[in-house]
Amino acid sequence: MRQPGLRGQPIPGRASSRINIMAVQMHSPEISPPEATTARRGITTGVIAGTIGISCCVGPTVAALLGVSSAAYAVDLATDLYDDWGWAFKAAGSAFAVGAVVAARRQAAACSVEKPRLGKFVATVAVTGVGTYAALYGLTTWLGEVSARG
Image (cartoon, rainbow, N blue to C red; front, side, top):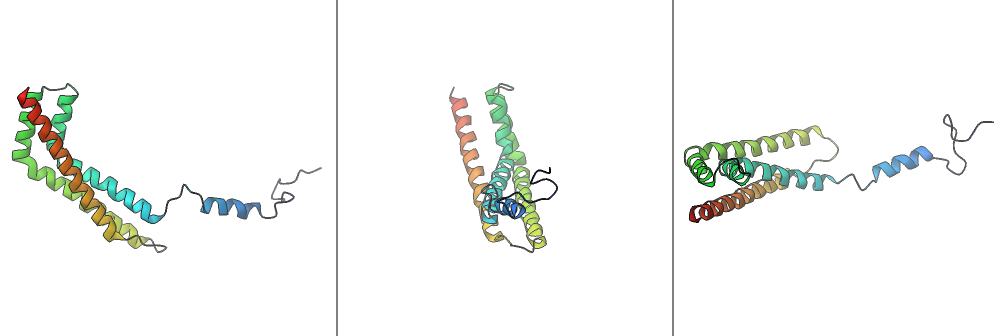
């Protein structure tokens, strides 16, 4: 005797089990709406861009905090990098942000189903990037002043 549900036979009481599975997959809470994904990507991109922009100061600071270098050397290196190459680090962070925006535009143009709002994405990247840069600049400046006193 054959068991129900094998080889495409319907299970008694479940006339449309395939449709129910597809409905559960489509309405799963794990799948986020495009706005949430765009906001999350914008925040992540902004944090990365801001960190790249200030990495001339963050890198030596992290090295000092990990004990790889002395605090005096880290302050000296960060000051030299910021004075001489700060523009290059800021340009690299800005280039990363612009590249992410261009990639988002291309992805939005390729998607014919629903287009995310790119203006909101650009604003999120800009505000988060500048905020991250300012926060890390303040932190590294404060750590430099604390190490100079001690």
